[in-house]
Figure 1 (cartoon, rainbow, N blue to C red):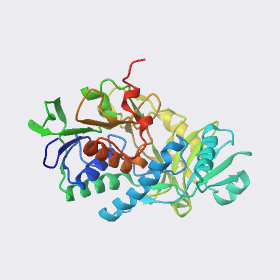
Figure 2 (tube, helix red, strand yellow; figure 1 turned 120 degrees about the horizontal axis):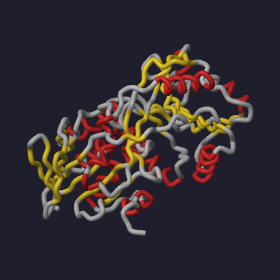
Figure 3 (cartoon, helix red, strand yellow; figure 1 turned 30 degrees about the vertical axis):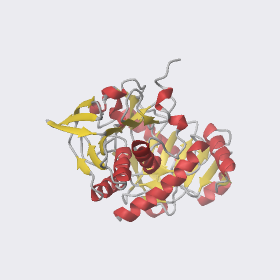
Figure 4 (tube, rainbow, N blue to C red; figure 1 turned 60 degrees about the vertical axis):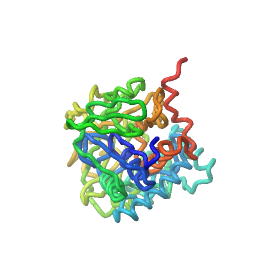
Length: 381
């Protein structure tokens, strides 16, 4: 590390890279942030108008302290960027009481003493008529959950980083990344750059980064669909929380109207198909997918017109255990990796940016990230 402010290169400015740039720049690091596209682009996982923020976490209670800190940092970003990013509209998990997701959120809430409500099918029908429940199903309500706006989040974080001195290099695809004696050399757009430390946050492009070749990251396609609301007012955030629906016929995430017209649905039961290369991301879907998504909406969301008015396709990197890879890059002296967020990293992005800054500048962090250790995929045995 140089005696002056360290020069940090960030490869990838999706939400994770953007947050790392922000948290490093405000601590005085000289930041160069590279991206093959422009901030807030629609090729990776940091787009699509809306993302879920949850505080009761079915993926494991160990995330709760990270989520609490992320919530604080989202508010800080709103203050410095003068943008509305997080709306605390509440969140629902809907399904049979014995479904693993319902069991997991109840366990998490009880373990950490988190505010919640449990509604039976009749109480839920009266309170949230936008959802059609079958007899015996329940609704778990997380009142501190909400909806995030991804494009303003990415652009706001990078603007805050730039205000603190970071250089944001859009349309700079990294052609060469080489470790040198005391740092790194990068080539992009025919130019050569040097850095004391590199942060690798390439999102679904991780398999194409030679330094990350040892990690089992699978690129998958995520396909949200937007369905027009018959009564828009009844589907805005003040009346419709975000929701995760678990049903024998369908599973999906549901987001309130943000665009003035439509509710976003991300079908889970139709799968997230693997992609050989995010550059080959299809920009449309077949009619069978549309019919199946429409059938789920007709069955479970009676207030929506069951034919999508808009469809989007995005790419994301998944690990075998569906948990991210965060920490020092094995086999290197001056590199940190944050990738493989498996579809549930956006809400946590500010705290992962803080963790990146901790690791780069101090070699350690107060946050518990032991379960995300990169070595779990690289060690032998």
